[in-house]
Structure formats: C-alpha cells, structure tokens
Image 1 (spheres, rainbow, N blue to C red):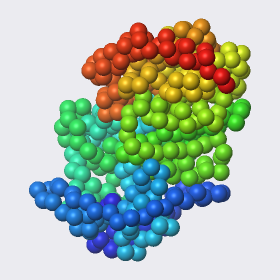
Image 2 (cartoon, helix red, strand yellow):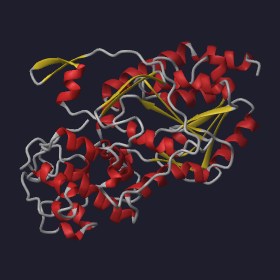
Image 3 (cartoon, helix red, strand yellow):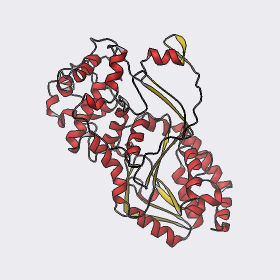
Image 4 (cartoon, rainbow, N blue to C red):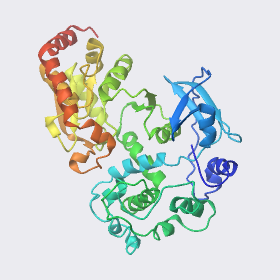
Length: 429
C-alpha cells in the first residue's frame, strides 16, 4: 500500500517495477522452477474502521491508493486484486517492510556496539542531527531528529526525502545529513524513515556489504555449513511484517531443494512447532529447531548432529549457542520417532519459554541427550547484546509469559513426562 502527495496514477507507476527508476537496484534472478500459489479464488467482503469512520474494502483500497491486495489462506490464494496498470507479474516496491529485515541484519553483525554513536562508523554524521545518536537509538527510532513522517504533505521531511529519490535531485545520504536535531536522543519514539537510512549506512560501513549482499549472506550461512540434504523449513506467521522480504528471498532460493518456506496463522512458537513437527517427522529421520536468531557457524554441523542421533538410536542433540552452552538446548535436533510417538514436538500448552527446559528434561528421562560443545550454533539474542530488544522479544520474555510457561512445564514434567517416555520406548519405527 502506498500514499503520497503526487497523483495516485503517477504514484502507482513509481511503485511498479521500481528498478526502472533506480539504476543501482540489485536484480535478483527469478526462480528456476517457479511454484505458483494453489488457487481457490472467492469474493472478499470486509469492513474497515479507522480515522473516525467505517468503510467497505473497495473504498479503503481506493482511499489508500493500494497497488495490490493478495489474500493467502492455508497456503492457497483465495483473493487478489490490483490497481489499474498493475498486474500479477509486476514487481512492487517493498517500502517499509525492508526496515524489519534491516534490523535483523544489524542484529547479526558480530561485535557491533549498539550503544556507540552511529558517527563512530559514519564520520560524515558529525555536525548533523545524528551526531550524538547511537546505533540502538536508530534501531528503536528514538533518534530525536526534527522529522515528521507525513507523505501526504509535499513540504514534509518525508515527502522531500522521497522526492529526492524519485526526481533524482540528490543523494539520500546527503539529504539525511541536512536533518537537524530535535528532541534529546533516546527521549521518545517517533517513526522516522531517515533513522533506517542512517542505520543502513552504519550496517554497510560495519560489514562492507550492501543490503542485498548482507541479506543473502544470512541465508547463505545455512547453505554453507550443511553437508547433508538437510532441509531448512522457515515457518513464518502470515502477519509477520517481514513476510514480503522472506517471500522474495524464498522465491530466489526455490531452486534449492533444501529450502522451504511455509506461512500460516500466528499460533506462537510452541503451537507452531506442534503443528509443523509431526508433518515433517513423518517424512524425515530427524527434525530440529532453530530460532530466526540462531546462526550455524560450524561447517558440517548437520552431519555431526545426524551422526550422534544415529549413535543414540532415539534421542536429542544440541550444540553450543555461546550463551547457555550445555545448560539449555536453545536449538535442538531429535529423532523423528520422538515426535511420531508423542504426536508433539513440545509439551502442548507451552507458548514460547521453557521449551528448551522440556527438551532437556525429556532427553535426560530417556537417558539419550548429547551436548556437542564444539558445534557452534550462535544465538544472536539481546540478552547477550547481540540484538536489540524489539517488540517481538518484549512480548515473548515477560514475567507473566515465563510464569505461565513454567507452570505448564512443571505440570507436564510431573504428570505427562513418564507417559511420553513410555510411548517413545514402546514406539516401533
């Protein structure tokens, strides 16, 4: 969806196939074997309330100058519509969805001091409104610079920034250097596109990579460290703000048989694993879990995991996440018979925390769990200052969530763990 101060027709044309306007765009090759969505198209009716009024879907799409609306339900395309001049074959500008991906990439930069001034990496910021702003304040959009994110007002800083790009009237980075200070840095949140532009400048200087190359490197880590036909299945909520970026990258990698992405309703972590785990256990010898903030570092980690699981026969294995180490399996792999026997990958009722405690307790009860200290699967978690505490981490790590999951875990350990052990030992492969 896009809105701006220019006419809707001109704006839509700018959003369609944006690489026409930006000669330095990075082209990503189409998938070698495209896989269109399964289709079961049907009408869509909705009422949207906002700005003190209620409108139907047609009015909402017209009012917001929406370029494309595609509805996917359970992996099937059920509705799609496009603005005049837009077709399903057009590529559209990703807009602010890329900000979430940018934050994830910054979180993966080893040794980056989030509390250092951005000017440490970009000396050009000295003398600008960003002179005293830290990397963390860029991530949290608390820079305090004098900025108003209003794309309907042609005189607003945001509209002038977009015009600079659209009209070729200057470099974006030259533009952000002219933004003056406002509030004290860190004093208040204010949505600010310029913060993300400066953050990407910091990221580029810290890594020496442009944005597309950095994103590709993140996914490439899995490809580079696997020795076996290990499939990476990315389970993504269909309301995840990063979903468009994940989809584009998954499209690029569709020719790689070891990559697969699935999206579905937001169930939270535990229920999502219990929905996907049995399906993949039915077609695999072993199933594992990595969070989106885990990164395999040891080449051949998958071969080490599989060899140990073969030695155990039935069991669980985990590596060194450089935070918890042997204390907790924050990433894990297990023989598929465990999931087949119990019908679950984690105790039902667990939402996000205490999953690793349950895997550890189960492995010990089976006397079949192995920690591999020299296999590094780094956990890039904010608890170790390897990522920023964004809204996702904040939601998952509340005292209330921990208490609720702990209660479920302790109930399962006392009453259901013995039954799980018996089911697993009696299961015939």
